[in-house]
Image (cartoon, rainbow, N blue to C red):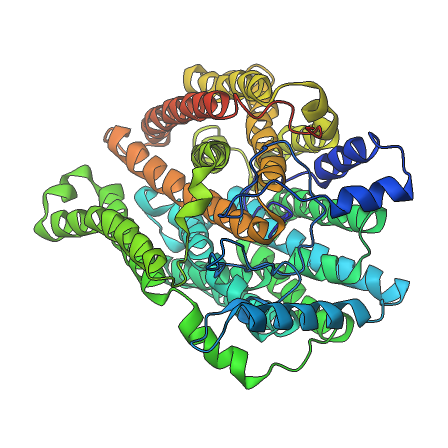
Length: 602
């Protein structure tokens, strides 16, 4: 997730590079040379923000505080200004019938003073806080890596049909995407420490339930609850770092540790789950995840800074300050769509069933209803879950469309590779996990150098080059013969596939930082991450439908069933290729005005 909400990506692909933001900040800071007087003059100069909180110059860099991660209720004031809530809780900006500009400014000043007077934590405790949140980020991606490599064994043990094999991962991403903004707001209003501890406890319980699942329904339900648990924890990651680590190198190092934890978590999920599944079964890998969540619950209780006592007024106002109707419309739309996709995964003929036709029509009809509701809320000065102002930046809108397609492709590609290695090439879970190492190494290398690339190369050129490289990956696997060596197609495919996704995520993060005012960055980051999670869900669901539709009936013997499965996988790989091409085109066209996003524009 971008550092504005969480720099952790709960998917098989590595995450936003904190070094990209750090290198870009360093490059911008190096322009002025370091005179204190110049710094004061620069900080006092007015920023070119319009009335929607957007920056009129897409390349500007800002010093911002991500302490508040759920400014989802920012509304324009009567005089055209925005509520500066970057260091205030979301509850402080909730609407109140008796509130006026003076009340808001006083509340903001008081909250800012309280934040300023908070004594810094000792170094040891700061290290402990970073270690706890980085470990939770690693656990989040451990589950993704574990499920990627253990999925065929789980499907065989629980008798999950091929049409539902991708749904344990898909429903996890659906739960995260639907609840991320809501839980971010609750964490700001009720306290980040209670939110983290509640999420850790729920993660331990849901992972244990997944390990004890007796059938597909039980596993899918447990993974959905696990997604809710991680959505509760994730918004607090960067908030804790911003609160405990001073701005500058200490905070940059902490964010880098957070990113490293996410990447290493996925690698450990691949290797440990592959080994444990081969030796003791997939449930052992699940038990390890549950035990780790329980340990982090205890560590968080003792290490995380205690929140200020929550007054009753912000909690009561939270009910009026959130767009509950908008949240309900979005969730109902996605729930009905997911049900129809599940039915289609069994057979495309189920689309003709009356209930599926009705649900599909209703889910499509809720899209304009959601847009109408958002506009109604804004016209009446009420909070909207996704304010329309964020879409007025074409670079941000393009980034959201591109990352939706990119994450859909990346996650579907990873799970299809695991199924191919184990169901077609008959590899063990551990041997299959070793074949994903090029993907992990590629992600680490890209994240290490992206900070320098964005300073020197135009964003559109980066997207074009990375897109061409990544588009070749699914083509290699779509045309390969299962008898080919891993080095002929599998190795280059897994090495190249993640390049576009990693670059896109890092470039989009810098665009968010440069295009939005500080009090709107958290909202934009939250929307961006929710879109990425929903892209994962849609990608996995559609891949399951295409695989099922393209798989011919088999005679039942191993060779024939492997050939039939390969036909379905080929079709899905071609779908990944098409989605990568569209994502690349959207990125190239949408970022044509972004320039070199790592530089400060005068």
